[in-house]
Amino acid sequence: MNFHDIHTLQQALDVAPPPRLRMAQDRAYHAERQNHLLVAHEDERIMAEWRQQHPEDVTYEQAYWARRRAERLDRSWRKALALSQCEVVENGGETIFASDDDRWEDMWLDTSDQTSEDGDDDDNDDDWE
Image (cartoon, rainbow, N blue to C red; front, side, top):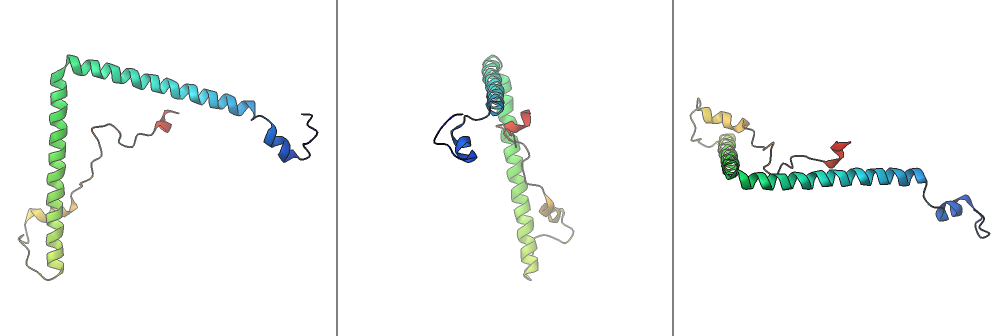
C-alpha cells in the first residue's frame, strides 16, 4: 500500500480490506447456514404434505399434547396444594392432609416440561457444527 497520508500501522489496518481468510470463513459459514435453511424449508414442506395425507396423525399429536398439558397442570396443582399445606403446618395451622397421606409426597413433583410441542426445547443452531 502506497498511501502518502498513512503514517502508522493502525491507519494502514483501518484502510486495508479484511484478511481473505476471514472472508473465506465467512463465506463458508454463510453457505453452511444457507444449506441448513434449505433443509429446514424442505422439512417443513414434507411435513405439511404428510399432515395433508395423514390427518389421523395430526389428530393423535394434538390429543397427545393436550394430555401432556393436562398432566402438567395437574402435577402443578397437586404440588402447589402440598406446598401450601407445608406452609400451613410451618405457621402452626391445621392441615387438611393426614400425617400418612400420600399427597405430602406431591411437594416433590417435577413440574418442569422437558419437551415442547414446537420442538424448540433448547435447540440452538450452533449444534450443527
